[in-house]
Image (cartoon, rainbow, N blue to C red):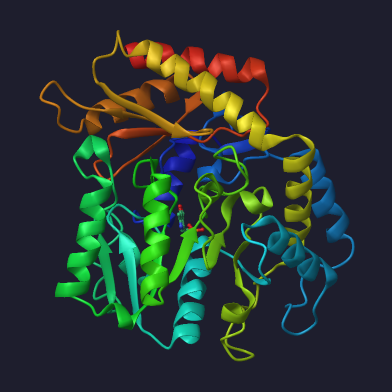
Length: 420
Ligand SMILES: Cc1ncc(COP(=O)(O)O)c(C=O)c1O
């Protein structure tokens, strides 16, 4: 078995709709390093798309999963409950912003968490409509696709989508959208498309992930909080990509001081095990009737065991502070390269959620450049992800537990690849 033969079998056995980035196949991985089935080593700056803030196979996480494996793997929480679920809900309720009474429900994927947040918001408000942002990514199910603000490749051929989902532009100075433009668009939406009294929820990623690592200005989040309070709309922070220390705080919304009514999270919560959740004000979370929420695998015991270990590691290894340090190191390297690489149009980030954007000589988004850097890096053993509505951004999602020497090695590769 080698990469080439597996590539042929993959193309014959699974659909092209599951787009696959790397032409090699994983054999094993440890912290920020991954080896393919031919023994080639890669530094993993994708981390399973923001899932491995605590790295591949953190010993604390694997031990916790192994210990749970020896007890039970599945009962379905709605049939026979277990303490680890209750304790993780308590931990999340205490760790999320706001001192009010909170409750948490667990699910399996990020999209499922977002879908359930909308179900809860509708049940609590008795209102149908949802507002999301251009460039947002909320998942691949039909409702979350409707909420996603990027057409290609997510929406093409999959409509019609659920109704009563509206978009307003996300502020992005580089692309000429100011905070005031976005707020004006919201006012216009309320005049031209939907009565605010019909809106259940407004959902925002505090830093857009797939959309290009665009951070919402804190003043913008505060303004949204005011709009929501004025019109009785619930504010949902989608922290699926930003959560669990990536931005230098446990949750990105903490940078603004804004307290959302509901928060969705997934990805790095459980170190590679599928686990997601919705946390929110207790009275809102209690709106759906018993049996209205849940799922056969929702709150899987192995994933919960991993999540407890992940939260311990984040605390003990001070990964939020580490995110800040690594983010600054990467940002200063990228900024220093701007003199040599004129295609870099912006270097931005919050904590370790750093990205570099490319434009051509005419100032137009340059997706080809982002792709070329990604390709060159892969050839040199560094796995990078692109993002952005125009596909012209490279984002960095290395494990926050990465060893200094491996991090520096990756930055050297990146520097070489950016220089061309
Ligand atoms: C902000 C955000 N929300 C939701 C999702 C969907 O998560 P999942 O792919 O686990 O369904 C993602 C995935 O990238 C995301 O980044």
